[in-house]
Image (cartoon, rainbow, N blue to C red; front, side, top):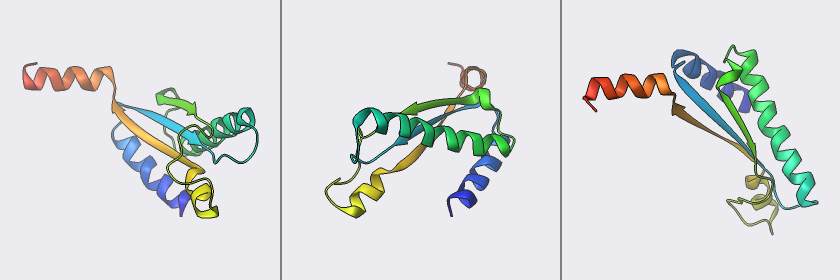
Length: 107
């Protein structure tokens, strides 16, 4: 399912090339904090590499790893830990797209 979702996302990202892409990796709280931070970076980088293979230009990526510092669920349960092991992607307009928007709105 994850690969299918990334393939669909790559199509959208390639269509809207005037965007920048923030890829954030997260972990659960199992293991040492430093290890989790590095793991979260590798997790985000893995997604970036996958998108790059779908022809998304890598200079658009910003990779962040937060380790266990931003949980969205309880790390005390297996389900919560699974939810916390994730990658989140945010898409932003780049400077060129912002300029076009300002020109079109008179701002």
